[in-house]
Image (cartoon, rainbow, N blue to C red):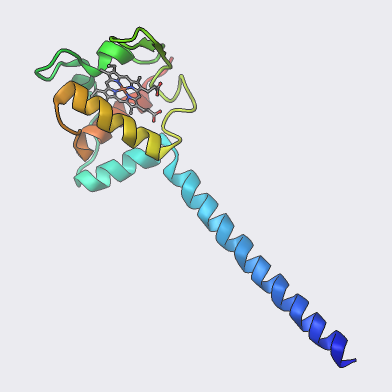
Length: 144
Ligand code: HEC
């Protein structure tokens, strides 16, 4: 029956398109998951800085003041394996170390937003890719 043939062909085509869609979604999903761990973010910052991250430098950067009122540690504590407290508002801040707070660094847009805001507060400029890589390398090595 020609009518059935054509509808079967149609179905097969749809199924093939659906399979391709699933494969694309799986790839996309994998890409998102990759970009959403602290380790992958750190690797991206390192690549942008064109040098390996340095955890000791990250600790020094995080705990020092940079010519202004606050250090990163002023709000996040040091080591930030425990909750911090916002210096201005007094609001509690969940630990920054991913081992202490698994939700940390799972949303690159959030991470970028706060790096921008906090670096401007602490340094009066954005942090460089190298500075972000160093801080992440240090945070990733911290154990609660
Ligand atoms: C004035 C207080 C304050 C200072 C100083 C501060 N932060 Fe933050 N930081 C916050 C708050 C508030 C958040 C958002 C709430 C949260 O994520 O718990 C945050 C979030 C972050 C995040 C987002 C983490 C994620 O989950 O992706 C990063 C990264 C970060 N801060 C890094 C820094 C660095 C680096 C410095 C120093 C250059 C710094 N912060 C200094 C208050 C501060």
